[in-house]
Length: 322
Image 1 (tube, rainbow, N blue to C red):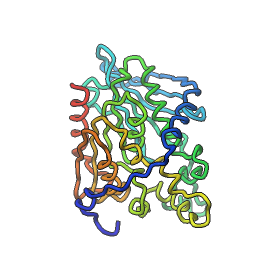
Image 2: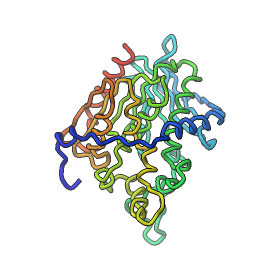
Image 3: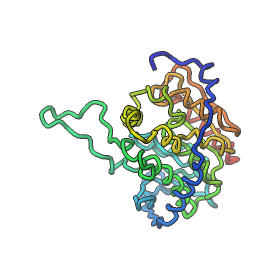
Image 4: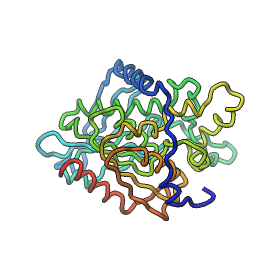
């Protein structure tokens, strides 16, 4: 952002909602397709220091296109099925560590590695003469499929969320009806989608949400990797028969906002160069639910690194009645 955007400008960001008329049928059809894929869940116990008071598992399960997703599941050793917080990391980020605070509360945690990340990440090319990688290189997961939206990366990520919720229902020691979805940036869009299309979600933690209100302000932030990957679509729009903006509307988290009826905790850095604050507020302003936002006036995408975990913990205690 060339200039810092004001709080008042953000607070008044309520763009007109214009979701595709077949938005619901598009997603219901995708979820129907997913149901035909067997889950094939696996659990492998990881031994570590805290083994006495929680079990830690490397888990995997199948999702759309028979793709195998991986994650870490920590379940406190307490009687009864535990409520659970699911964490979705940002695009090209690495998953967070297991949070001791949740384990102490008796809350299970599932940290999902987004498809195409972790060991599956497309390897960065290296220039043989200099031995260096190109600056700003990204794997281009968003650069394909928008002209046949069944193949678009974001569709697969969203369906992975539904499969994650189904996986939790099958997991021993987990209360599959007591789920909070927690996302960072693009992970927040995933959390919103999960709550829009599953009635098992009890709360949302949305840290610096992105992939919502994908408009000129958000698309101007070229430090954001998915923005850079999508930019060529917009540049060739004039000559292409497909209106990419209309195609993106199927995936814009703002178009799921009206379906959210559960409590949501947002965070926003007013100097964020990855998730535009106006996009975050657009999503926030369109939700009709118990919602609150932690605002960090002088911070960017890492907003609330010090304070936010405690706010998240208090929210989890409130939602699960702990």
